Image (cartoon, rainbow, N blue to C red; front, side, top):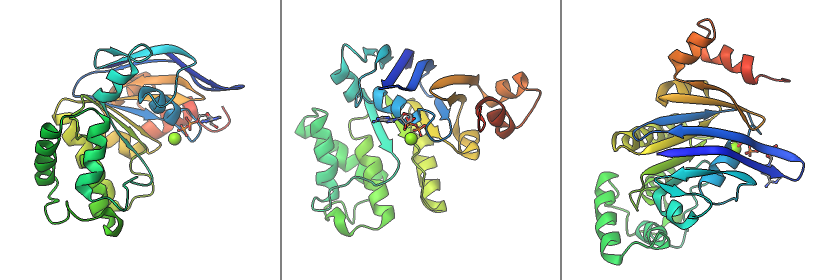
Amino acid sequence: MIETKNLTKHFGEVVAVDNLSLHVNRGEIYGLLGENGAGKTTTLRMLATMLQPTSGNAVLAGYDLVKNPEKVRSSIGILFGGDSGLYDRLTAAENIAYFGRLNNMSELLLQDRIRELTEVFGMEEYIKRRAGKFSKGMKQKAAFARSIIHNPDIMLFDEPTSGLDVSAIRNVHEFILDCRSQGKSIILSSHSMSEVEKLCDRIGIIHKGKLVAQGSIAQLQEQHQGKSLEDIFIEVAGGGK
Ligand SMILES: Nc1ncnc2c1ncn2[C@@H]1O[C@H](COP(=O)(O)OP(=O)(O)O)[C@@H](O)[C@H]1O
Ligand SMILES: [Mg+2]
């Protein structure tokens, strides 16, 4: 479960996230849809304990974000778009283990879990090779494994498909759906209508840091005379508004 309550972040004069309140159930994919600068990354960075909220709070997997950030940190997996962030000079297994240790996993559990994920993602041939020479696909699988090494209840995805080619996008989508089938609570930020329509159980449209519409696609359409998601988006969060 994820529950945010009036979550707010100011950067000087800029209100990046403005009293955001939302909840995400177990086994649910919540799509945070917004244009560039809407406040998606700032929201996810606060939930990931990388940024302190200016005001408001959240509860993730039963832990209070402000009072107990370390517990929150060990309950979430993060996959942010862009570079995979693997260390070139470490092997895939070392990269994954490094993250597991940051999450206070025991060596025994860590090694078991690396074996399990090596099989899940078919990484047997390269798990002990240095990441620097990996293909994009190999890096992607190692990054997936790294994000779930500690079997978190919650997954945060920040525009995880931006800049990827079609088959890499497909891999990310399958990974997100696998996370859902394992009962994780998931937030996926995106500016792609088709991506959120394909994957999300519920959607929140964020504009200038505020949640301006929320619901399943069917609910949103019911509230907006049966319009397409794109038309709804333009209406509530479009251009110069
Ligand atoms: N570290 C920062 N310092 C100052 N302003 C920031 C910082 N990070 C984000 N912002 C501003 O906060 C707003 C929301 O940004 P962001 O959360 O990155 O949006 P999104 O991810 O939806 O594109 C933007 O106006 C952005 O310029
Ligand atoms: Mg962003």
